[in-house]
Length: 429
Image 1 (cartoon, rainbow, N blue to C red):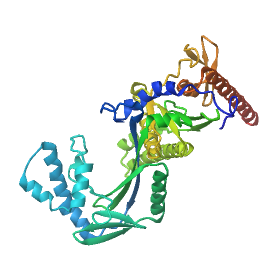
Image 2: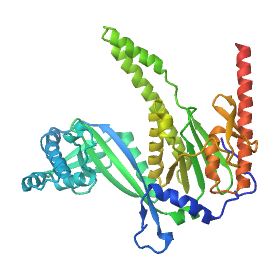
Image 3: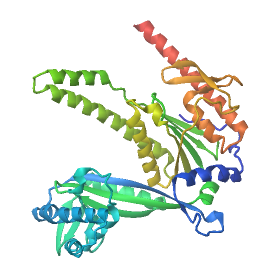
Image 4: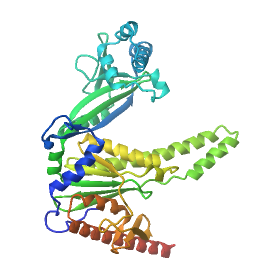
């Protein structure tokens, strides 16, 4: 839903100096500054790195020679190399054995794989064949084929038709956003191939805030779904999107699992596993759709996104914990691919954005919850409160108050529409 400008052709914004003082520390708190503390005298030269990934996965029929090389040569040598670096061993024999692997795959492994005991156990022995996309050595994508060069032999793996088109669109999007593209390939012995695109942007904070167009706020701390608000600083208009989380009957799934433990039928556990997989697929599909829609709203614009990160304590023992955190990570990655920085903060939802008083819930219809301030008596839609707190950093207080009134009227009309629909439904029933 799109809102009209509050007044005039442009929103009444605060001075840019206020933005720098309040937003720049938030940006620097999560990402590393380029030039911060390195003797740079001019603060306008401070930069942040914003990055994101795109991955194309597919299964292919690997040539027998390539599969044998991964299983019998590369994986044993890569495992020895991993433990050599982890334990700090200095052995000429191990170094000589590692040099038996072609240079392109050795270089990619040493730069991509960081020795750590936190990795999964199976990854200690089954590392995928890693290679940068190079023109003459290693692997590369040419047209609709993946080329893998090994010991003066060339293996050609066809890409899925839609996958090749998708890769081209993603590369064009990275170039249009002004990012630097790097690509690499990971091939497993079972035939699973991953083509990874990494798009990195080096942004000047001064330039970003000077040309800022859109402020986006995403509330993921809601059992009613994801709430997205994009505010245009040029016109004062806004756009709101809601993404619903599919409800899952966990009681039924647990009941199927309990019955499977007591039943001797061979299909009992299959039924329980099928129900669980179906539930996860539904949530994952809704999550990916929400990320795609939110990214589409901001792509190609000078924007900063704020994600309302919930307290881990408030989500403990909740079925939403994994879904909400996964949504925040995926959205940050998708926006970073297009050069849009993300600030993760826990934003207040029970404090009035105008006077700072305490808010209490007065009405609730469906997914719309209305909060009222004890001090000033102003009413707000619950999900819009974090967004109003963020917008106070960028626009004048009078503009925030007008926007709060417009959102309150919108929620009132939604409540009225919900009541009329429910009344008609009850009369028909």
